[in-house]
Image (cartoon, rainbow, N blue to C red):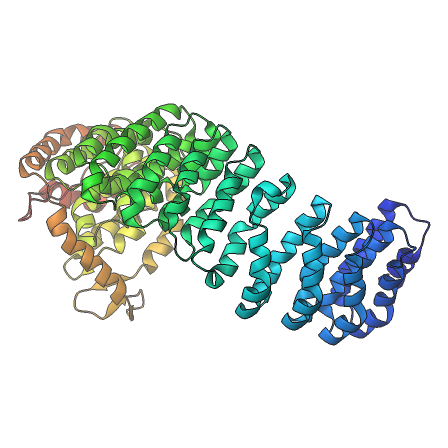
Length: 628
C-alpha cells in the first residue's frame, strides 16, 4: 500500500525540496523489499523519467540515486541494459551536483557489472571524473577509484589502475579537498595494490604521504596521523616502517593537540607492528614526547593502549634498554603527577603498570610504582581500586628479586590485611581477588585462604560481604583428599555466613551458596573435576596450566626467610588484639557460635588457634599467610 503512494509523490512536481527528499528516501528504503520484476516495470521507468536532460537538477540527482540503489538488486544483464548507460551518461552532466551524484553511485554499479564491464565502461568515466574541474567531483572519483582497486583482478590493476594511481601521487598539484580525501584513502588504497607494486613505487607513494602529513592544514595532518599506523604495519615492497619514522616523530610533536591525540590513540597499534630491532629507534622519542604532553586530550588518547606499548619496549635489546627505561620512567612520573584527581586516567595508568617489570628495574618499581599503586588502592576512587589491586598482584608476581618481593608482600600484609581501617582491609580483599587468576592453587592456599577466612570474621559487615564473594573461587583451588581440612573451613564459613545477623551479608551468602555448592573440585589422580553429583568432567587443561604456574613459582616466588619469620612473630603478637576487636563487636573466637557473624572463627578457628593463619616456612622459604 505504500509503494503506490511513494511512486505518486515521487512523480509529483508540486512538492517542496524537503518533501521530495522525504518521499525519495522512503522509496529508497523500500527497494530491497521489492521483487526484481516490479523494480524493472515500475521503479526503473520512474528513475529514467527523472534523468531526462530537460528535468531540474534535483530530479536528475534523484535518478542517479535510484539507479545506484537498484544496481545491486538486479541481474547484471538488466543493470547493463537498463541502468548503466544512463548512470554513466550522468557523469558527463553539465551540472557538477549531478556529476557528484553519479560518481557516488559508481561503486555500486561496478560491483553489479563485474570486472570486464568495469574496465570497458566505468573506468573511462572514472578517469574523466578524476580530472574534473570541480574539486568535489574529483573527491568522489577518488573514492570510486579505491573501490575499483578491490574489485579488479591483479593483471587489470597493474595494466589499468596503477598508472592512474601513480598519476595522482603528486600532492602539490592537488587541491586541499582532494588532498584530504587522498590521505583518508591511503591505507585502504595501498593495502589493495601492495602486491602489484614495483619496489620503485615505495618512494613515490611514501613521499606523497609525507608531503600530505607536512601540510599546513591541521585536518589533513590529523587524517594522516590516523592512517599512519596502518601504513607502518604493512610496509610496501622494498621498504620498511623506517620510511615513515620522521613523519611519525613529527606528528607526535605537532603543535595541534588533536594531531598529537590522533597519534596517541593509535600509538599501541603502531608499536605492535614495529620489529623488536626497530622499537627503540621508532618508539622511544615519540612515546616520551606524548607521555610528557600536558594536553588532557593527548593523555586520554594515549593511556588505553599504554600497557601494550610498554610491553613492546620491554623487548628491546639490552644495549638500549637502560636508556629507554630511564627516559620512560621519568616521563611516566611526569604523567602520573599531571593526572591530578582524574580517576579515569588513574585507572588506565594502573592498568598499564603491569608491563613495567619487563622494562624497568626492580628497585625503581619498588621505590616508585609499587607505592603509587598502594596510594591509588587506599585513596583512589572506587573505580580505580580494582585496577590498582590487580597492578599490585602482578608486580608481586613479576618481581625478580627476593628482597623487594618480600618487602612488597609484607607491606600488603601489614598495611592492608592488618590495617585498622576497614577500607584497608577491603583493599586487601581486592588484592586477594586479583591474585586468584595470577597464582597457582598451591600458592593461593598458602597465602590467600587463611587471610580470606580471617576477613570473614571481620567486625565490619562490608568487609565480610566483600570476602564472601571469593569463596567459590577459593573452592576451585581445593584438591582432594589432601585439602579436606581447607574444604571444611570453607564450607563451615559459608554455612555461618548464611545466618549472619547482618541482613545484607546473610542475603548475599544465600545468593552465593548455590554457586559455591556447584563449584567443582579437583581430585588427585582423577581425570578431571568432580561435580556436585560426583561425576567427573574434563579439567585437564586447567590442571596443566595450574601445574605450570606452580613450577614457575618454585623458583620465581621465593621469600626472604628472616622477614617472613618476623612477619609470623608479629602476627602471633597482634593476634589477641584482633580477637579482642572481634569479641568487642559481638563475635566469638572458637566456640562456633556468634551474635553477629562467626564464619571466620567458627568455621576455621580451631585451625587458626592451633596453626595460625601464618604457618612456619616450608622448604622453599614460603609460609602460609593470609595474602593474595
